[in-house]
Length: 449
Image (cartoon, rainbow, N blue to C red; front, side, top):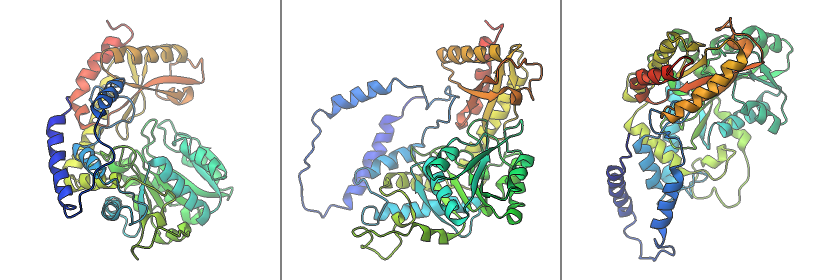
C-alpha cells in the first residue's frame, strides 16, 4: 500500500487556492518566515519517521492504529493555513460551527435527541469531563470493570474520587453479580460501562445495568471510545446489539473519532444527555467571549485552546462518508467485524494456537499452544518478534491465567498471567488479508517451519 502523495497534494493545492480566494481583498503583507532550509528539515523528518511500524498497511494487525481517511488528512492540513482555535468564536468561527455540526451527527448516530457535547483532545480528556460532571451531579464511588481502560482509575484519583474495579466474566465483560454486590453498599455514584474494552473488545451489559439505575440512583457513563461507531454496523451480534441500542439512555457517552472514525490524533468526543450540565462549566473570562452572543465552545469544555483543524477534518469526513447504517462508512466497520471472526475461526482450526474469547468487535485474542502459562507466554513473545520480521505486526496482552483457562482448561497455571497475542483488525482491508495472516502464523507456530 503506497502513499498517494502526488494526487493528494494536488487536491490540497486546489483546495488551498479556494481558501486563499476568500481572503484576496486583504492588503499585501510579507511573511516573516520563509521556506529557506525547509526542504532539508522535512527530508530529515521523513527519514526519522521511517523508524516506525507500518501502521497504515494491513500487515499491521497489532495495536489500535488506523490511518485517517485521505479527506481527513487533507482537510486537517488545509485548516492549518489558518490554524483556528475552537475555544472561542474569536479564534475559530467556521471551525466551531463545523464542530457543532459534527458532534450533532455523532449524537444522531447514537439516537440522542437532546444533548450537550463537544470534541476533546482524545478519550482520556473526554472521560475526565464525563467523570467530573458525574461527580458533581451524583457524588459517590466510580466503578468500572477490571478490563475497562486504566484511565478511569487514574482519572478518579486525579478528581479525588473513590474508585473500584468490578470483576469480569471469562468474556472480559463486567460481572453483573459482582456489580450488584457493590451497588447494594449504596455508595456508588457512577457506573462506567465499556462498549468495546481496549484489551479484548468486550461489551459490558449496558441494557441490564440501566435496569438498576432507578433502584440504586447511580449515573451511567458509557465509555465507547473504542467501540462506539459499531452502533451502525450491520454485522454486530444480537447480544452486543441489545446493549448498543441503549446508548442514548446513558447520562454521558464518550467516543473517539480518531479510532474508528478515520480521524488523525487527537479527536475525542463527549456527549451528555442533559444539556443543563453546561451550567457546571460556568466561568468568567475577561477577554474571549465578546464577539458573538452565540455559544462559544470554550464555555462548555474543560479544555481551553483546542485545534479547529480536528473539527474541520471530522466535518469533511462526515460529509464524504455519512454515518448511516448500510452506507460505505458502516460497511468498513462490518468488514472489520467479519475479519475478526474469520481470523478467530482460522486460529481455532490451527494446532499451534488456542483461540480465546469470541470477538464481539474486531479484536482477536489467542494464545500460543504450550503446556503451561510460562511457556505459552514465552512462545507468544517469540511469535510476536518473528512475525514482525515477516512484516506481520501483532500485539501482546497479559491476561489473568484464571480467565484464560476458561477457554484453555488444560493449561497449567504456573504463573498468575498469560501473555497472549492480540490483533486489532481495524482496517477494512484486513478482511482480505486473513488467509495470509493465518499462513504466517502457521509457519511461526510450535512445530512450524
